[in-house]
Image (cartoon, rainbow, N blue to C red; front, side, top):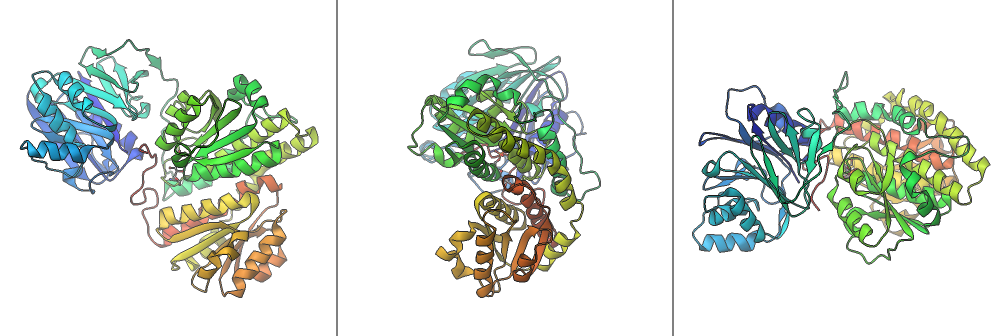
Length: 595
Ligand code: AGP
């Protein structure tokens, strides 16, 4: 999973490549590399570390270049494994996985090839070299026939200079048409500073780009991108993550703006699917990581509010299962980036079975928005930190509105719909009150920062929030954390509870409140420390818990939006105490574009 970019034209390639890689860094940031050709001279740079630290102002290097931002899949993080990978004057950047690389490597080694890296990508350069007969695109075409796996590649060579050859199978690649040449990239965010005219390559397509022309195997439509790269800065915040958590109340307002009626919701992106949704007998909610936890919350919301059979699915699992799928069902894909490969693969499968596919997506123009038949934008603005926070709040808000939409098509009565809608309008103020007083959460996080294991519990709507709290903590603090429904503790995890394993109990005054109190007592009886999330003024929780974080009251189905906020802050401040690399935690990437 990586970002690739290339430029050929009248301008210096190097600064364009560096600028593009900075936009693509969310796809991987363990190492990067750039190769620029200049009349048979090759400038090659490969470095471990982040492209964001690279200066794009540099001396003239040439007008043709490719670049890569890496998230290691095959081969450890080191300079020799960074891309471009090279063999015999053929330079390749690659996003994807070559599944048969070991067999190919063995075969090529037998023929006398020497390999310099541990990557799967290097075999592509070797194969191209093997097939080269004076024409780069012919060699690439033949080489790709021998490959099993996924790829978005860009290839250059001083042996056939004046062109960039690109190809795609299951990894995205687009061409930007500029006034001065062509730019290619894994996604449009990297080209939008130079052009709004793009062509999206389809699977099994190849293209040859020259300064003033391009050839693709078949005629393609030029699309116009109708959005801008929103420029983002940390402002006065130390980290993007804190800034983004602080935007969580604003995100609620932005998600509901213009979408709430008196006793119904107006979601433009669902208009054309209205009739099919009315008839749908099951909703699949598909996501990964935090997106999956939003989907899981959506499952509870849809069952409760809409009275429809709903089931959350992990994008990485559903495609391999024999779940019964048919055209009377709908699938809602929940994703911040809209580029998560596991989701996109499941989307393809759902479509094959005739399931209506919809998206709850943040990034405008992303692959998910193009591949689904409709959907709702979360409107959170750009999320930069790898740990997803405000996007989750946006997803919960949108899923609540979709539940109302589905409910009104079924048995949700006007009074109940009005009640939820009214409270949705008040929710950002309540979220603000939590965000406005986070010193207590910071203090508690510091107090517990030396513990190595944490347990998160919640029930019903707050069970997925326990999972989200645990994921956020492990992701940015590298501390072990797990989430379970409160009722499951006694079925096993209680064995792990002692004075060294604190439990974070999400315990608002809802229909499972008493059950949660019992679960907290079970923990206490085993000497476990308890940090509780409870409603303001709750004396019962105060008596049981060691520390309490208070939140305002709301409707049961809206509690997840409020209970999440302290958990995001808790993870942030605990990671801060441990001095972790909060915005770019080790081993991760913002968008996971490999399966
Ligand atoms: C969340 O903090 C993670 N970084 C990760 O689980 C993320 O939510 C997941 O990879 C899905 O990403 P998406 O929302 O862009 O599809």
